[in-house]
Length: 77
View 1 (cartoon, rainbow, N blue to C red):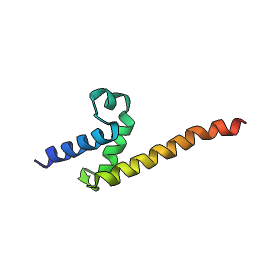
View 2 (cartoon, one colour):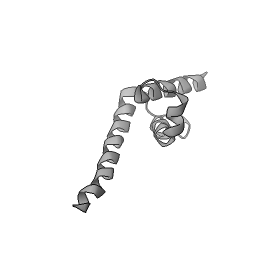
View 3 (cartoon, rainbow, N blue to C red):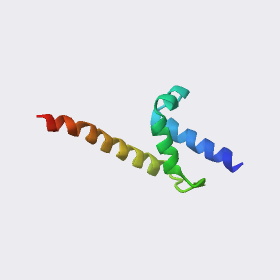
View 4 (cartoon, rainbow, N blue to C red):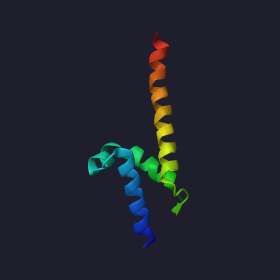
């Protein structure tokens, strides 16, 4: 029963992040889906139960990745 709860929680997180998640979101954004799962679970145990906190961490990581992508362009000029 706990496994179903974990899966449901993960799907709800994906749905909030991807805005109406579908299979293609997971296929084309597998690293992001895995990162969300990694923020939620450690060694098979749920370590964070707050959806807001998990999504906050994921959004912060998105911002950092955008800054890193833009950095090489700024160095060219």
